[in-house]
Image 1 (tube, rainbow, N blue to C red):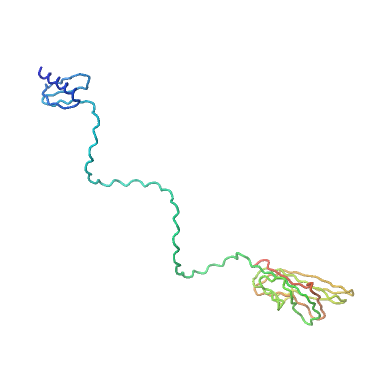
Image 2: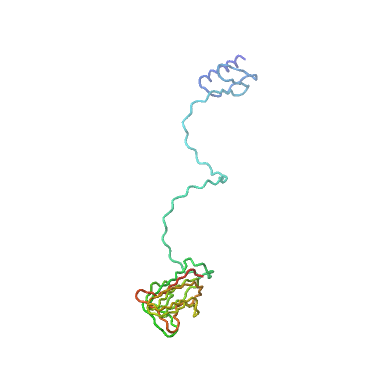
Length: 251
């Protein structure tokens, strides 16, 4: 028993010197406790004695070991949030023109985006005396003829566009007692509105005008016509005789 205690005390002394080690020793079956300000120790027969001490200083880093075998692929991670839009890249070179495709089906008629403009205004600079038969008045001064629907040679307006039109015309008597005139605005040969002036015994001119609004179809004709015998119209460079018209609304 005394020998065992001596060996235990020797182990404690060695522990104090080297900090941490394991010493083979024979001991009794019973537990022996040594208190020296350190942690407890246990001793067993035919067993090693283990002494626990605080860890020593960290040693130098060892060399890197060999690369291990490649592991199994892990599970697929979640999809990340979209990144910011990058800058627009430079435009590519213009490609070659492709072949013309087949013609498409004809579409339904659309509305006119820009309504047509039709308008004219003409004047006569000479008098017309006793023509003898019904005479279509012609005019030698073209003030305007937008759309080219007025024919200067025939004196007739021929509608190219169907729609609602406004027309006006004037007449003037010769400066002579007893003279008069009778003229009509005609549509396709039918009288629509008229003018009639008569001079009395006084030497004077008399002038008047009339107007009308027509619904015309494409191809309809409008003109001014002077009635038969013993009629006279007066005009000169001041353009007393006029004929005008314009399209109000195309239909």
